[in-house]
Image (cartoon, rainbow, N blue to C red; front, side):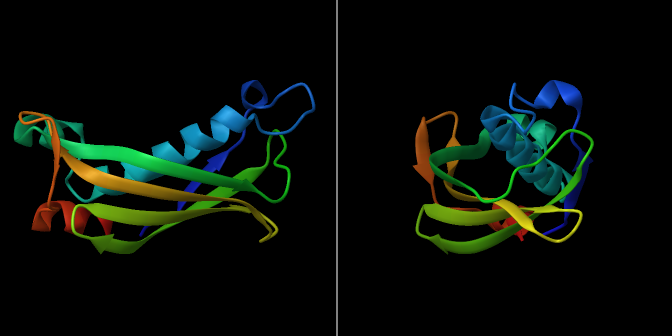
Length: 129
């Protein structure tokens, strides 16, 4: 998947001066949306099809602190999709190459009409790769 780069702003850090824990989740989510949007499966497509991503589980691991004005890169990889459930591993790297965090995401494709998980469509799988 495509790398996602961003510079951390002062409003994203906590009183200790490092990236706020909630912002990690937000940045990882922005990176996932950036990927699927770039592959033609953005919000417009989701609303049209009435099928979109739903998160089932998150596991966030902190490794190195991230400070204001640091540039970070998020790498995302679809590691598994079995039946209705997939897994993406996202890694956040500092500009010096150190890994700052890792997020394991368990997700599925949600049918908004039936309100249930469905098998991944070819379009959905293509958007995740």
